[in-house]
Length: 263
Image 1 (cartoon, rainbow, N blue to C red):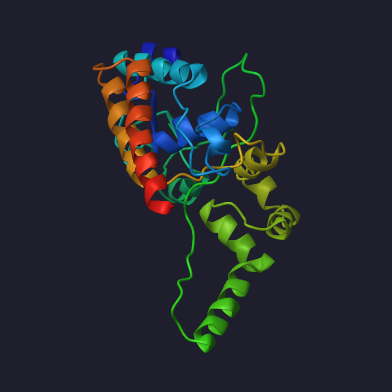
Image 2 (spheres, rainbow, N blue to C red):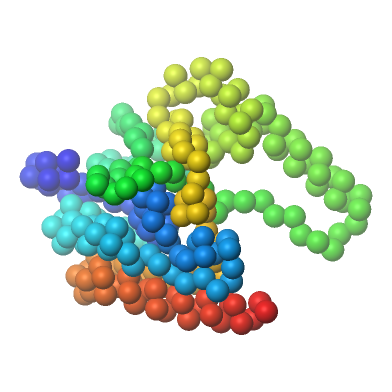
């Protein structure tokens, strides 16, 4: 498809949001290969990064070629590419399901939602994708009556009817099966094709040690390192193997520092 778009003169065949989360973290889970040792960090603090394996190198190398050929246009580390897609400038866009509401509200064209692509020939693919980092935190140090209010609010947010509405209005995943079922029974998925793709990707298979998520110290800083190294690939300054090896080496230094501070 990228070849056809480029040959037709399209200026932006493909762009992406959140390049590390989609094209390394979810890529690894979806192909059932480790992003890090020790079950992606869940089994111990002595984990080491492992996203420089053959599947990840192949994928980033291919995207690097697309970048040099003008088939993949890099817009930024966060969700800068969303504006390009919503404006109709880019034909294909890899993004969180949470982007659905904005696209539906702003796009003046018909669009469709499809599962994340995967490489054929990789054992176990497609496995399942993983959630992003959007979350609600409750901090310690407050009075008991305040926590009673917090508990009631969390119960309200997690109720099937509120979760169903949140899921339908935003594109974020429902956090309960009851909310997903309520959405299905209401006919929302039939009326809005593709809005259940993320739910299906998450729940199609029982998660493995490689696909249940990530628990890594200093991960925000590690993502910054990954972004920097990927940008070197997109610009043609580094090969995929060089960049991912460097990101792993630099990231492991942060993990060892985190491990030492946590003991």
